[in-house]
Image 1 (spheres, one colour):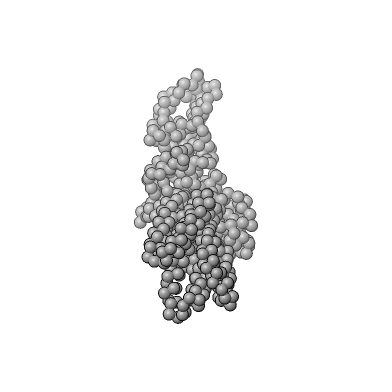
Image 2 (cartoon, helix red, strand yellow):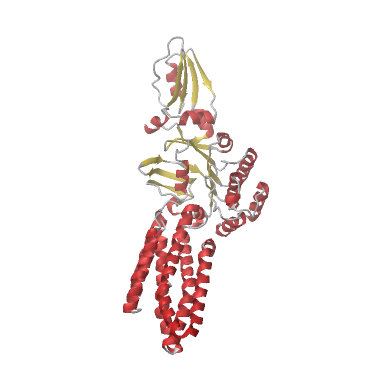
Length: 209
Length: 310
């Protein structure tokens, strides 16, 4: 399994490197932005709303890319003739996607939490709560977008997954802004992730490789 | 363990409403070399892909090394080596990287044997697969498949793209591999001389049907080409089963008959030919007669009599 995960990461290293670089830049931006006073608050507000959109598309693109290259280069057809089952290939692929989401989202979310904490309230007392409230939906949102890409990568039309992930972000951000973070958001995202993964697995496990 | 490494049961496969395989019942005994022949589009690759679980059958199924081919467990997959038609190795990987992938994902990897093959074929380890010639890709694919020390080696037209020397090297390696006890090879090929040299059993596919499935020697015995010369006009037709081809020229009739036996000989003698000469047939001639369009071979098969079966 480790070999399969490592292969997925290596083959999609562009995404991982890009995610790490972008995460580092935005984290630095949020941390050092504290020196700019009022402007900083506006930047954080705008950044918090805008960042998820390109990030969501990037995660979705990773899912699409995995399936696209798999079909083009017949990678699974090769792997499935070694001592590896389709289940192993699929799980390794999903784990690689989740790792990408972690690399891309965690530093940014962490930086946002730190910044928000500095402005509004004493940092140590609320940080744990904020971490849970922001990090979990952020992770789930990123992973949901990845899953949309994964299951939508099968047909040749790549517009659908892009619109799907954009739509998901556009729906969720207002929901979060209006209702705040809560179990409803978790439920929506978990349901979406489950549906996408089940559909992607069904397609992968029954298709000709 | 079954006496067969591969056993298919009435496999039917449709692609976009077109029947590609029509009731294939194939049995490959353990420890043998089975040559699967057929013209382009006859369904050879589809059968192989079904056996490996890469393609679902529309109906029917297959058992490979005791497991259902559609859900082969890791323990069985680890005993199968496969060389795909066109040698579909990941093109942007270097030889070294793809070897590492095989090494890490194979149940039995023989590094020493792999190094020997790489040296024999003089394959550059740092070069990308996409930069290898077709012949080199074939050699790499063979080396990888053989280094996994498979109990069952499935080769889909493996020598396609190889020069004569490389082809000979491959055949010798295949023979070396099979010399280990209990190992089985199933291979499809267009080069009939290779099949004739290597295989001990033959299967011939014609338009999705398995019209021949028997030992090579048995096939040669049972597929007969006869030159019949009559004193007068030859009979309008010979009402015997299994006539694959019939050519007439004056008083002479060239008759190719499947499933030849003494009864057919006795029956043919009742037409009182002036002479009846047996013309020896090579595998290539049998293959051409069996697969040429317009022959009655498939008709006989539909009536329940394959050209040759065990």
